[in-house]
Amino acid sequence: MGVDNFVNWLRDAASTLHDNAAYLTELDSAIGDADHGANMDRGFQAIVAVLDESTFASADELMKKAGMTLVSKVGGASGPLYGTFFLRFGTVLAGTSSITPEVIGEAFKAGVGGILQRGKAELGDKTMYDAWAPALDAYDAAVAGGSDLAGALNAAAEAAAKGRDATVPLVARKGRASYLGERSAGHQDPGATSTTLLLESAARTLA
Image (tube, rainbow, N blue to C red):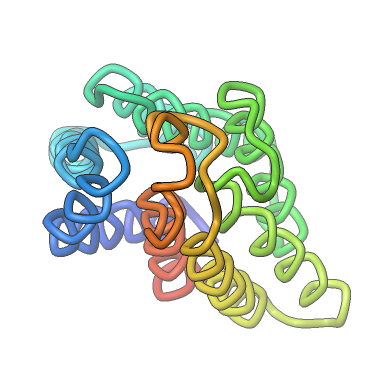
């Protein structure tokens, strides 16, 4: 696995988020600022512009640049959260001669750790972490069971989708949605949805 795999992931994620921008914004209009889709699309199109203009000697350099681009180009909560994810993800890859499924798992955990440090969310708060947490557990279980990277990423994406769906009945306890109190129940969390899209993209491109 090399830089090209991660370039493919970022490009595929950008295309997927562009195609789903209106859907993400529709979800966010119910319980947020109605800008999640537009913000994610803008941020990842900025990453694509960087990829079109630059080459990267290593995967960690690429992922850190992607993270910095999101932090600088995306407003609201999603830019800093996803930007921090990619920055931390890239840090784990630094100096690694062989990017194994175990290393990818550590990179995901570090990235999500950055999200938690910034967002202070817990499981059940109706945030993107409700998709990330089961995804990490499923990934680790798959690798521990001898799965290859493709199997582990697919397991993570499937678990994220279940976590995303499980946000619908929850009452939000973090972010703009928490202002709605009980009225936030019955709506799918947009951050958990974009997280699932990213992991489904990873499953298509990284393995």
